[in-house]
Image 1: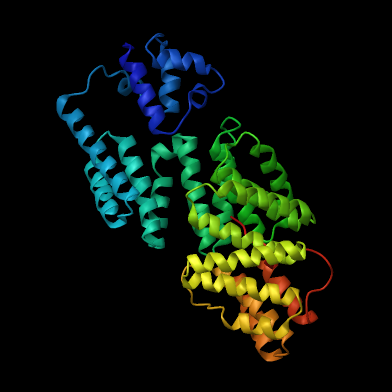
Image 2 (image 1 turned 30 degrees about the horizontal axis):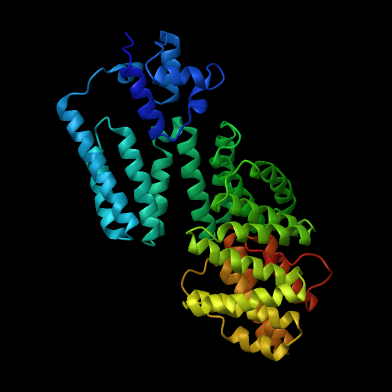
Length: 424
């Protein structure tokens, strides 16, 4: 017996907890307006429709039909939600250890209960916190456990969220083949969602970035065109900027440097008003490096000057290393061999937060500087180390380009420089 409004209220609660829209829940056989009427208690669905709704939410009609929660169950649920809110407050305050303790407590207390949505949300946020605490092994383990959660498998949005996060984590760790696989999984899952959903664009950005890094540049050009078609409905902000940035990388490698530089400039303008400091810094580096490779002299010099100002404000070992890379590229552009060698000497390969691909890219620029100043042995050693670093990460095309540049005595042809492409 379907009791309204209890059934509709519970449907709305579970749907929102899973990050689904009314259109997602409606599917092909219902309309979003009908789902809205059910949730508001103004329609009593028949048994077949009720079962369909329950299956899409990964639960049962009986669970959705409960008219009243027992007092102890309700009190437990409210307690768990209260702890979850406290953990979110700790995250906002930047107290990651406290957030970790609070979230672990919620996960432990919710185990063995039927508060599946609260437990899932706590596990998801715990994975995020482990990432912020720089515990990659535990971060990955938490995400893989979430991927096997029944709630994840029955909710495309949750499935996509976890797969995207795993793809990004593995790519940053230099495990590109695995990163591509999870990004492909995210794209497949989000294909079931309605156009305009942010998860669709997030999945495509993850797959395009991993494809560029792994050297699948023909595929990247196609993926870039598909992502370009998804950008228009995205609101201004980090996701739209990341999408533009990813399309720019594919455009440059596809032989369209002017288009790539335009997209990068637009992306940076969008990020200027956001709180994503890390993303803004990486985009600024990416745009500067690409402009040094393919842009006009005045713009390249202006961006390099701005990079110096940024390091004066955010003076950390990684930021100094990245500035040294950019300075090296700038000096090489102007055929200033001595200056290139001096800047390359400041590239600290042990600087924190250098991902395997970034470390290989740094070595490549050191090798170019050594070659320019006539240090053949040092150049050869760094070219080999760069190629080995790329190979270790699964970026075999970039490794091949490094070996080719070593054997040819320099870059050949007028085509794009793949080492100048930093993806989001």
